[in-house]
Length: 270
Image (cartoon, rainbow, N blue to C red; front, side, top):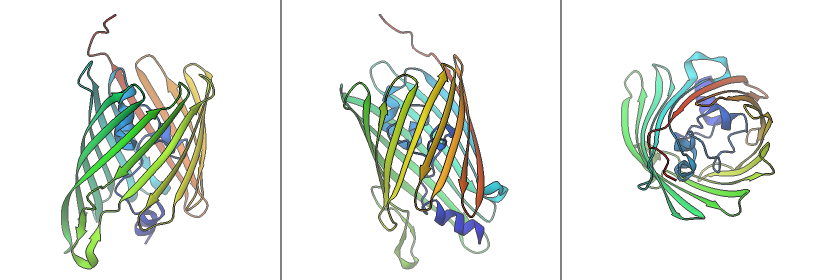
């Protein structure tokens, strides 16, 4: 019961939010530029200057049977664009979803970037139900409106991929529209609206504050249902470590953590 209910609570979607930085900001992440953009908005990968590898873990409501895991590798190139591969898994032996993605981001104009991703989704239900294999297409856009303001858009499951033949059940299709405004190098604010075709709209807002260059404090809130989020981040030269927590008024606390390592592949040309 909790497994099914928790899936409903988080939007009945295979587009699970990944990354503890965005989690601390209520997952208002469609305009955030970091390595986790491979999950949130592939167009935002264009802002990355270094290659990186990263891993994420979430113990949803402190129940090991409904944990969420993710990992990614991102490679920016000098001229071709940015490539990314990603993996995520949700659930346990009785029910789980695994997703493998290949992403690409490219700057079209100085003010506009586009990103695409094709994902392979495997949904497994124990007993006599078996597995279902699907392919999902995504697209993202990111506009640098001003030096301080970015607006992002992301569409998940453009093809409305079928999940099961019974009742014409399909992988949920959703749209996200949001913005990030940098008041200064220390304060960033993100807002976002998300709409599943069959569910009420969800609204999110988060703040990221840097009291020191290497340390970040984050808070956020979201609706449908209401949840409060918070997080901390440590940014070293090549290593980013983030932790976050989400509090649901009924189901309780969900701890989250992610670790990212960045490195240079191509030498910068002056």
